[in-house]
Length: 229
Image 1 (cartoon, rainbow, N blue to C red):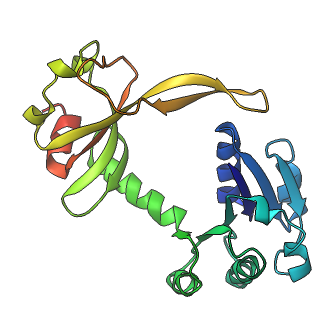
Image 2 (image 1 turned 60 degrees about the vertical axis):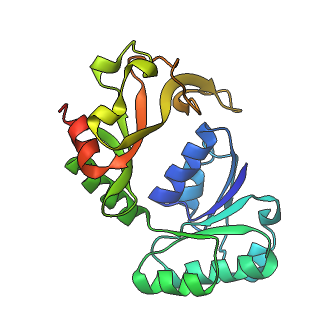
């Protein structure tokens, strides 16, 4: 996939690098030459320009992108102006915009962007859930009862077929899939280690050391599993 990321601060830069590692094409845009020069070797292409100027927006290859990510993190006016210009000149492009404050997010909602993200709030929520659930790598609460977590497979599960593991014994939960690490080489020739989902698992699937279980269930039951109860 092809992404245009506008705003190469900490979040935009980290997102761009990760997408490159996953084999995607990323064009980074920022009006700060320091930001763009630091990322020249890491992204597919970088452009130093002010996206609040209409003529500059029209020169960007946004029409070829699957997503335009507006990750400008401090200047609300620049963020909203950039979103408005993208919607005007590239109405078919899906925009993911970073919301800095409640008011900013409310305005973005009226602009009908594809998705609004608040990475700081999302990470804070995930971190709080992870601290609450010992051993959890990631936690995604769905409501006040259910959530999805990623957790290292307990040692007792290693070498076992799923047919021999009765998850209902631990409460109300379902194994969604298993994440397994593998080496991969991106289009820049860099070798990275990444987790890959096995897709739909079955009773013959064997759990290996290092596997990460993606589980859906009730918070209390998942917490008991993580705590080894």
